[in-house]
Image (cartoon, rainbow, N blue to C red):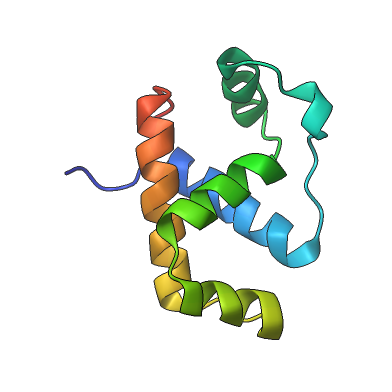
Amino acid sequence: MQKITKLQKQIADAHINAKINGSFQCPPYAIASKEDVIRALQEGYTIEGLYNEIQYRNVSITSMLYQAVHSYTTKAYKQAMYKGFKTLLTNLNIK
């Protein structure tokens, strides 16, 4: 399996920071298709729904609790999020 690319890591970091700061940029009604997601990510927007799905599918409950309750991002949390973003972005052909 390939390593996460620089662009993929930038997108993941932007989403993690948006979660911490509560500053997601793309409103839910602006995304209606796969092409909208690809376009928004390539333009640098952060999407809360996308972040939540990746989190629910990849991060352990313990790491999610640390993030939600204590606002502390563990190393395991970041690694799981990077893995989820890498998988998704590779499937969307964003490398």
